[in-house]
Image 1 (cartoon, rainbow, N blue to C red):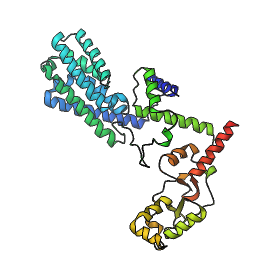
Image 2 (spheres, rainbow, N blue to C red):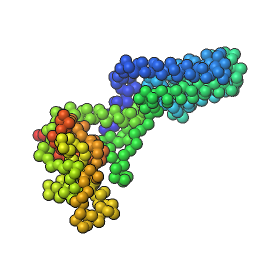
Image 3 (cartoon, rainbow, N blue to C red):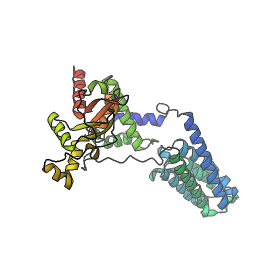
Amino acid sequence: MNLIPAVIASRVAGRSSLATQPRPREWLRAAIGATLGILFSVWLCQLLFGLPVALLLIGPLGASAILLFAVPSGALAQPWSILGSYFLASVVATAVAHYGGHTLDMAALATGVTLVCMFVLRCVHPPGGAVALGVVLAGPALQALGEMAILPVMLNAVALLASALLYNNLTGVRYPKRPAPAIDLHHTNDRSPELRVGITDADMDAALDEFGEFVDITREDLALIIRKTEGSALRRSMGEIRAGDIMSRDLRWATPETSVREALQLLQHHRLRVLPVLDAELKLVGIVSLVDLSDFAGRAGGRRLLRRGGGQKTPLSEVMSSPVVAVDRHCHIVDLVPMLSSQGLHCLPVLEQGQLVGLITQTDLIAALHRDLLMHLN
């Protein structure tokens, strides 16, 4: 199992195998962002430290802008990467220049030391090397600042990062990259069902350690790529099993005006856990489950009503869940698994042109997966 993330990591590192070409719209988005970010950072730097200083530091700024706006999901483009690398580069470069002078040898030494420090502090950012070179080989304007050269360097880093944070998020790109919050539906310490088997975090860490090289991708993105790869392989092996093939068709349903008492009787008689709720035009407007009715019964008033055989006057419109997560009949069975396993859904209505045509429960899904497994064994 450890082989899979290692193979993917090697392809990510190679880039040519996995890198996808973004759409022209994304080219334009990134180009505009990089332009605005550089202009803002240079303007602010020259405002506080003068144009000569700003121009001496514009090279690393341009390289950083490519990363922050064109590949904002990469590990090299995260906030700590740019802030940490710029800080380390400026500190190391000023120290080296102070003791060794502003020579080419000292510039190369500063870059090497900066790289080691970036590895140690996990803030690798290639333009940091250019910062180290620029500070050591700086012109008179930057040299005159001495140890204070760190200030315009960090101003550039903060200004460009602020621009990326604002622009990327305003244009629909989540930045910085952060893991999606874990959904704890049952309030237990268990991992989500899809993470209890297969590749674990420990497997991924072991594979990356064995791979040994730096991989420019966040751990969360690598895990997502692996899961999507597994899903694609599973979809191919399972063939064309769709929601329409496994759904229940002879449905029992209620209306928003159906009482809680009547819904309970329907569920009990047919041994169901959920009831779709349809309006007068037979459009799906909600769904009521045993959990919804349990919540109603848990309220003081609802508990007294049910104890006295009531609930006759309470319509389902007051207790049903709405809006409803539904799928198309052509939805592949592989796409149903996470919805019915880790998203807290016990059933999925199946719609065709807005009309309810079926219902898929966890039982339906288990039976279909079991049948597919038997077919593969044979």
